[in-house]
Length: 392
Image (cartoon, rainbow, N blue to C red; front, top):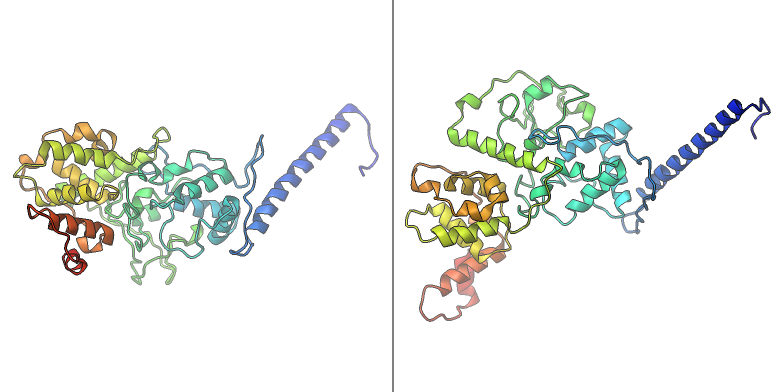
């Protein structure tokens, strides 16, 4: 009960305002408690997702904005979660539990080492949606991932599963707690340099030589987990000593990430790459000067049209054809109809591709069968043992 006091209109308004504030705070604590209790349910039990209210004026987690949106230096969603956990005052693992509870399923494994946002798994959009809903940053946080290209790229298109955490030592040395963030480009495997300082990205402590855990908390990320030596130091720029190919590859990665960071960019259709290959085969497939690497790509993917491509392969195709990666992604047919670049410069080099032995077994089997059956005028079905020998 409220104590007796003045009954003037001003005092009555203050008491009414306080009651409204307490009701709002009670509602907020009720939903946060629901998330906390749901996140502790055993994995074998079903987790009911929280139902959003019709007129929601607040979010369960702070509406922390993504840093560097619409630029090639956009913050990665992995680092965003670490920064958000630091702001709330909880651990990164606890933050993942809250996201799993809000989604109603285990989307974020508790002990994963690879990024959950650099692959084309079916859970990618669900993971992004869960974080966007908790923070209220709808249709924005996805641009801290390669979401715009996820229908075109393969599972490990941007980085291998066992890729270690990388950083720019100059960025760590000049870190601003309020404005700095780890960009998405640091997670791209073929990206070698920091776009801001031109220094080489590193993945080891300069003192003890050990790799650093990817999920280290925000306040401790810039010191070695093992010897506590600072991970930021003065590093000379090496961009001036790079080959023209290396500099061009760096620019292509920046352009792709800038495209992905634009909120106005919709998700690219899955047929971008295959439209390019079909038009290229029609226009230039019979050329005698077709580079063996390019001929292999056209041949392999024509047998397995459902196979997706990696960013490294796209960069190679763009370089050999004399266009940019964005040309292939945004206007594939018209780009394929241009005169190829390899017809003018025979000295072009390309990035090492994935060995065929690491391709999916079904793809290798399709290639082997097609090669066997097209060698003779009359085709006979070979034995499975013979096919297996040729498929490797």
